[in-house]
Amino acid sequence: MNETPASAPPRIEANGLTKRFSGVTVVDGVSFLVEPGQILGLIGPNGAGKTTLFNLMSGVLKPDAGRLVVNGTEATGLPPHRLARLGLVRTFQLARELDKLTVLENVLLAAPANAGETLTGALFRPAATRRDERAATERAREVLALVSLSDHEAKLASNLSGGQKKLLEMARCLMAEADTILLDEIAAGVAPHLVDEIALLIQRLNREHGKTFVIIEHNIGFIRALASRVVVMATGRVLAEGSFAHVSANPAVVESYLGQAA
Ligand SMILES: Nc1ncnc2c1ncn2[C@@H]1O[C@H](COP(=O)(O)OP(=O)(O)O)[C@@H](O)[C@H]1O
Ligand SMILES: [Mg+2]
Image (cartoon, rainbow, N blue to C red):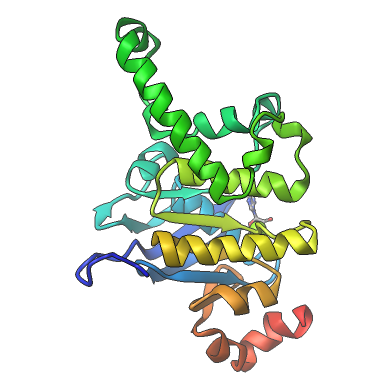
């Protein structure tokens, strides 16, 4: 169940988002809403601009035009850590440095307290810091239990399977305490049993923890099973929007995407 009051603003309001690379418009005036508690699927052929749109929504890239509002706050052009503070995060493939850390350390580093914590501040408040560390470790272990990685907390991240790394990416998002999580092809290249586990995890985080998701995915079964609403992009624009049944009955969607994907 989603506990957000009915009066809550949309989690994300994208209004005319536009991005050009060397004069080529790859995201072209994209507008849509993500409501609290929704799982929004974002689909479309390769090169449609989906990942670029995520980069605009997560602060990795600044839009050339358009606006982004996150949880009712103007957020256009904010960097990723500021968007995270507004409640919006995306998964990132684990950076190579993080490979050399344990699973637990990877999750701890994603704690919001780490952002803006200075070393000097930490040195002058040792007791408080130790208390904070204990609380953070406890929280990190809760998050690892949620994603079924408890048994692996002491492993180096580099020793996880591809699918387990995706679960760790998800754990880092949860540790950041975001209410909205953007997932870019989280099921790609993952063993089938782990794809099912990831789908169940998304469903549980949505229903029991009120998390809102936007998921880019080529696995159409995954989208059909999870998404309450689907946005279809092609050549930088929104081609269709609605329930999975609605968009999959749209001839333009079948022609540009679903025809090949099926
Ligand atoms: N940093 C970049 N510089 C130049 N072109 C880019 C850059 N990122 C993406 N593109 C181009 O933008 C288009 C959309 O790419 P992308 O957003 O990755 O699409 P999708 O995720 O839907 O496959 C593609 O033609 C891609 O080559
Ligand atoms: Mg992409």
